Length: 583
Image 1: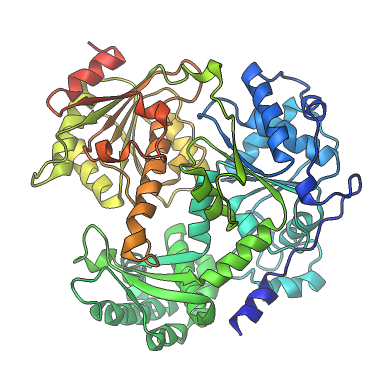
Image 2: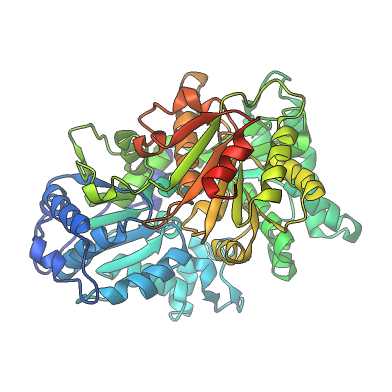
């Protein structure tokens, strides 16, 4: 029964019919001349031209990973290839992390190229106006059933129009979430996954919904005095949450939620009333209400999900930080991902993919081996050998130690740096709790303005904030890493290695290799904020001696490894000041 439902929701891809070539996707054939001719207002740098040639050679027979440092112009390598493919009649899709990057593609990059077919930019449904509610469309009301009704009654609906373009247009640029949300019968011949390390995170977000106790508790408290539909709905949910959490033994971090409890959550009365009331809520309550309704909807479709309760990894005794998780079944995920990628040729583009085979398998669910995916450039271009010459990384070998409050100790050292070192500074934390703890300490010790960024901010808002900020605080999971440029950043301080919580669905033997790889990729994304263009100079401090154990991993770039200097907490402030040029 489950497989039937999956196939109904995500139909198998039909082979693409192309007007010009009539070849199968495995026969993607493009000439160097076809790609180079797309440049109209700029010229590729010599190493970009060499990489384009290498890409075209490899792309004809296998999927490819384009691996170049941040700021070296990866877009000017893959974009002429994508445009040439679209010009020739292949159906092409470029996937980017955010709408902000889509805007950059349209305004910054495409004007430098000539194309016979203008790309269609497809955003998520929340960016279009619903003709029924006269408000922004959202996933709570714009369901598959509702879109079916609108197909006949509202042919001018932009959500429906966008979905048709994803099905029909020859050249599409869209974000990760939109791509993962729309099943189509007609596949693509070439899919370019820009910043493909971020696509892994998008997959996790798409197929797993997480709702924290504090989010619903806050929603309930804000509406308790109103005694409205939201307070009743959230209160009933919290009662069930308490019972589920109480059944977890003290030594456990995660536990499967029994089917009977899932049924009770699915049957909470008042769903429609909350849905109606949502349109009048402020942003905070609307977000919390939507998350709650989405989770309940997952409970109502229990056959497609597995449910877990999870205590906080760093503070398991705090119920406020506990969470409930609904995760789509492995079969569902596999069917969706393989259907979306179909028979397309795939180009992964990243500065920090980690182990290529693991990365590519995770993204597409294809079975790659070392000989079935190419990595280019095979030899680092000579022009980029000194790309990181202005980067210094200091690793403190005696931190953390067995101190009562390691965050307080590191914050005191950072406060000294903030007092003596001018310029824009980024502070990176592994989790929200450490970030809040350090914020309180720093605000007592320094007078500089601190900009606090968490996961609640949209990417466009984050970009605006960092453009104006002096000192920036963010967790490793925040939107700051999704294509955000921090101009004039000189100092980047990592308070501890950005390990994520072990996934609930992995057994203990597999969880650490998974989180270690994720940590190293996130760490490199953080370090990479410092060098965005040739000649950039910057200093990164890592308050964590554990890096010494992990930096030899294939998931950590040799270019960064070569820039590391070992130091200790007594010397690090002066070392940083000398590297930046303060003393």
